[in-house]
Structure formats: structure tokens, C-alpha cells
Image (cartoon, rainbow, N blue to C red; front, side, top):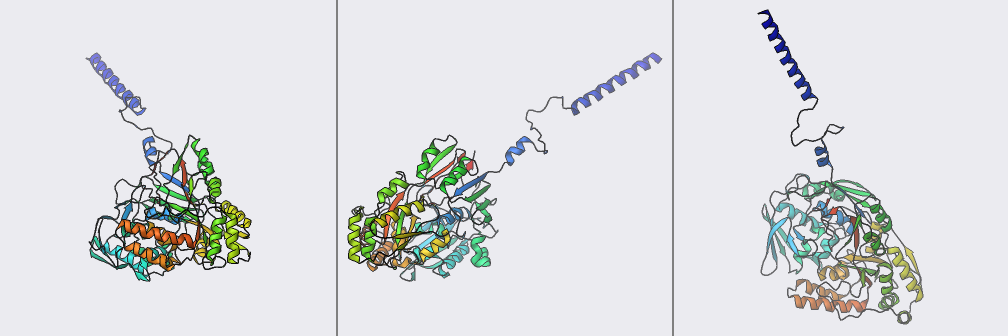
Length: 545
């Protein structure tokens, strides 16, 4: 009996020891693990969690800083490059063309007489400040554009005013998600115009509260929200977590970094400081193509680079002097030297891909002797002029300083001495717009693919003080352009633009220089980036692998 008790006690102790050893073994992790596990990192998170937490940050290197982030009041591409991602328009262009697609409006109708446009708006969209996007918000934006000072709302006045009258007679919210535009006369490119970046819809609550400082703290409906602006350095935007298009954007943060020198910007890309570089010098294209870590990107061309001649300032108030300058400049040499074959010599103030281009115009050939004859006929006294060189590279002008130096030599050869002048970009634009330059380098990237957006916007007398930097005025050209705006027959409309180009060619308000193929470069891992011919594209589908 005693022996039996001892045996029982020993058995119990053995079982207890076995349980204890099993428990210890489990705590030490020697038992079989489940099939799906994650390793723990030093900070206590799993590797799986760490991978998911890596933010998608894109650093976009560009040629200069923005002027303002209020799309309604700016005209420069560097501003639109940012605002295109903060704001949205009622209609969108195609990914790489200017076909019309839904935007903040999912559908629209046009009346038979072309005077009434009805837009049906997306439901459930909010501005970044949490207020609702609706028809009343659209009305308030249009009222802001119409009621603003003409010198401030450049685009609205150049696109939707003619002969001192508003083309948009009224805009009405017929219900919460329907808005009706009524025009005072037909405007053939109205849908393309309203899809342009300057006519993005902003939060009325925000712009009413901010007043003129709205451009420093912009509020739209777009895929990215404004974070901060370090002047002349960088602008940061962040993913809109409440964006109305599901699954977008793919990036968490975009930093638009200003690096004025093209070569320095490319170097920043090659050293990994940035992910995308705008404005690659044509001469550097081979460097990019030979680098296995980079990709060369071509932007579809829809631009014009030109030498503007302020028609109200001597000596360029004389047509003969303007014609002489056109003969004096060797445009082919400029294209060969600074565009490396990725441009064509310009003849007219718009590219040949635009409907209405006049192919019958031969253009001014390089003829210094003819230039001298015209200067003598004009009685030019040989006084020195100021030649303004752009301080930043633009898609239509990769190096304004070098182009200015080439033009300076051409002008000197025919007896026109010149002094090259530069200003900070915003100051340059403002002074040139006000007619303070003698001759100035500038250009234009088309906003909507329509001839009206080149010839009327840049050279009609109604747009002096906005985009007509040359202060060119011709009543006959004006009548042709106004008629073309209202004409719905495309063949008739095209002929009107061709007639206007003939007169402009004779008057020579500019020296058209080149239509370029702008180049960009990016890391191989940047995907989904599709450069738009307008120069302003949404980065909503871009990601980094």
C-alpha cells in the first residue's frame, strides 16, 4: 500500500514536470509556427507593417517657382503645374490631347443656338476645407472671375470678354447639381475654354475669407491638398484622403522643387535628389538615354517660342523696323544650336498641328542685307535697345540667356545695338505685360488646342494687358478673330484664321522662333506619368515602384 502511494506520487511529479517543460518550450518559440508570420523590427513593428508604411513621395524638379497658386489670376506654366493637382475643372482634357472628357461635371448639353450650356455635376464631392462642391459653388466662382479687376483675371478677360462685353451673360444653379451657362453670343471653343486650368473651381468659403491672399493657401477639390510653400525653393502637396475618385491618388506627397538651371536639375535627378526633371536640355538627351536608371520623356508639342517686339515703343512702333528684325535673326541657327533638332522653325504664331494654320505663308528668311535696307528706309537712328532674356528655362525656350546672346549678335550685324536685361520671373512677366520692354523673349504653350487660344489670346487688341505682351493692335485682325470665335462651320472658321495670319505676318509684331518638343527625364521607377501638351498635367495616376 505504501509502495503504491509512492508510485502514484512519482507518476504525478513526472506528469507535472512534462507540462512545465512543454510550457517553457512554447515560450521560447520552439514549437511549430503558423504558416503566415511577420518578423518584428527593432521599433516593435512588423516588416509587413513597415513595407506598407513607406510613403510614396515624388520630388518634381522644375525650372522656377510659381507666381501664385490661385489658378484664376496666373498665366505662367509653373503655377499651373501645381494648381492642376490641387484644383479641378468642370471638364477635363484627354490624357495626352485636348479632347473633352468629364471632370467635375459628368455630363453636359448644348442648346441648338449654341447659347446655353447645361452641366450636370458629380455628387458627393467636397472641397479640401470640408465644404460641399455644388452648383452654387460654380456660380460663385464665375461671379468672382467676372467681377474681378481686368488686370488681375487675365485669362477670364482674354477668353470670355470681347469688345468690352461679357461672353458669359449669366450662370445659374437650377438645382444643387445642375448649373446653366448662358452666353451673349456663340463661342465655338467654349467647352475647350472652360476645361482650361485657369477655370478650375475653388472653394468659395476659402477665397471669400482669404481675399487676395487665397493664392498663398489654395483650397480646391483635387487629388492633393496644399501643405506649404517655401518661396523660390519648394511647394509641398499631400494626398487628399477624401478624394472623390476611389483609389486615387497613388502618391502620398509631391514636392515641387525649383531648380532654375537645367543642368543642375538633371544632376539632381542623377544623384537621386529628385524623381522627375522638367526642362531637360536637348543636348543632354543622350546622357539620359544612356543611363539605365533613367527614362527620357517627350512632351507632345503645342507651343511657340518668340521674340516679342513691343509695338507701342520706339523703334518697334515702326512696322519696317519690326520686319527688319525678322529678317535679321537666323532662326534655323538658333534651332540647330539650342534645340538639337528637337524643334522646328516657326513661321506663324501657332504650330502647324492646330486647325486653321496657314501653310501658304513662307515666313521671313534670314537676310541681313534686306534687314539693313528696311532699317534705312525706316530711318532707324541706331539707338541701343534693351533685349530681355528669360531668367528661367521654359518648354518653348530651354535657355533664354543663350538664345538672347545669339539674337544680340544677329541684331548687331545689321546695326541694332542691344543690351541684355534680366529680371526675376514674376517681375519679368509683369513688366513685359505692362509694355516696359523693347524686345523680349517669351513663348506660349497652348491651353486647349484651338487656334483662338493662340492668335486671339496672344495677338488680339482685346488681350492687351493680359497675354498680348507685344501690345499689338489691328482692327481688321480683331474683326476676323471675333467672327471666328462665333463661327460653328469649321471650314469657314479655319479660313478666317488663315486670313488673320496673313495680316499678322505683314505687321510682324513678333519674331516667331521655334515650336519645340519639350523634354523631361525621370527615374525608371516612376510610372503612370503622361506629360500633357498644355504643360499642365494631373499626377493623380503617378506612382513610384
